[in-house]
Length: 227
Image 1 (cartoon, helix red, strand yellow):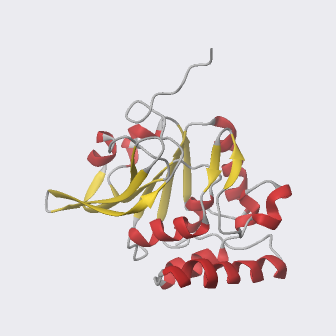
Image 2 (tube, rainbow, N blue to C red):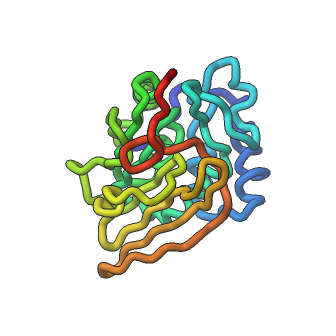
């Protein structure tokens, strides 16, 4: 399996990551060794503007432009652990954003397919992931609420923006057995939900309250028109 090696890093940031993992992630109950190692390894600071590098390992989300954010480290770890990946999965991510979540997933899954609707973020994420050698991450510029039909089905689907409901195309593209993690709710408050398909049966479980930016698209929130 091709993974993200570290090519641009320093002791300063490695120490910051170790502190992030021990104080923000392990301390809150994240126990999956694959997830902990991925969070310890992927250089989060490279996925934000250089002016924010000194804040990259803080316990909060950061802006990445265009009204989007890079999620709080704990939430990235929590959602990744919720997928219960073992190492051979094909994963779909909706909402590439900075590319950080895709890089974390690339450390664990066999392959990651990620869809982003904002051209500048898509291009920036591709540049960062290429710089880190993430050769098992495939990006697409499109309306993520439609998923990635040509590459389906997926063992796992992770949605990193909040939807008013579970987009039907994503459910259709989920393998059996398969699992999806998605924040569902209104624009101010959502609940992180796991959706499982096992032997044709769909089940849902609520995990915890979260707050994400809106999932914009045909099967999510409608884009606001200027003026």
